[in-house]
Image (tube, rainbow, N blue to C red; front, side, top):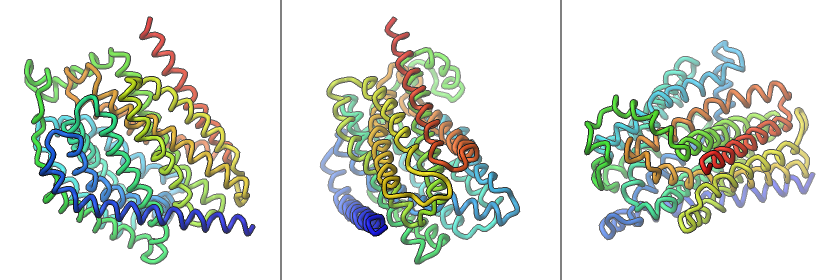
Length: 454
């Protein structure tokens, strides 16, 4: 028992130290960003100017991750709805995101990106404050829908900066820098959010998050470079035909006839959505809560997933660029995820506190799953952006299609996890099914490669 307590304290110290280090590093990036913007043009270094913005926004959102599912469940029950209706709040958000993904990609393809980013970031700050003041189920539904309208546009704007400020041969590395900032922010936010809620209350955390995103809005105004949508080149779409949304929709069936584009957008996109939002952010806090893990420790345990991502993301992205072996790393990532969740399936049973061995298994499984996610994210986005279909539908629209399937995975994920938890009585054995899904995706990925090679 004493060893269990000491291990939890060690995790708390290490994770909090990492979080504070990342916050300090972001402050340094804020200081350096304006100088970097002046010194470098059309260079990978200019990608640095977008990273503090990403850190501030994701840090704010991650502050409430460790208690968000329980918070939504509390509001749902007190509004007279059954516990299972909690997933509706996730689904309404994700359905709205799906409807806006392709229009969002089209919007940043033809409009001023900085203006879009300023409007969406400021509105997100207001919504976070409103979230902290809302107490009824239908109020949360409306806020989730509004978030769903904004997030795809904001995300597409950030991706547009990465696409325009990096060359094709540096694309995976540029995305790895972007996602290192994103996951670093998530690590810091999750680690500090649970402890912050003990002092400010859960609603106070949302107010702090809103203030952080408001600072991000000011950063966009003063530090982010002003780029038009197609400043660094025109797509074939814009030179041969009028770039209108109807033409983009008509071009989509042609894009999906490209086997490589299809396999990455569908299989990798679904995997990332199910893994991040469904399993880690929704399923894991709930099952740990059912296993009597304190709220502040849930966030600290989940941070291991992000640490695993840090370990592999940048290295794998560089190797994928150097070796031109995107498909190899993507297939290894799917296989590794399946194995990771077979490991996680053995950490404990419902209504039992997690043993010392169970805690070690949980930590190992989360670390491995984060590491293999690092094989998929930046490499997958880079592979989509370099695909030949981007000359037809545009890079931002192609990225939006990838995000569409990723978001579809985030809808399927919470529903699938609720079904598994109810079926398995919140036992860790539910993760055997998750591992099986990822192994099936791996086999389909290999099969698609074989068909293409024929």
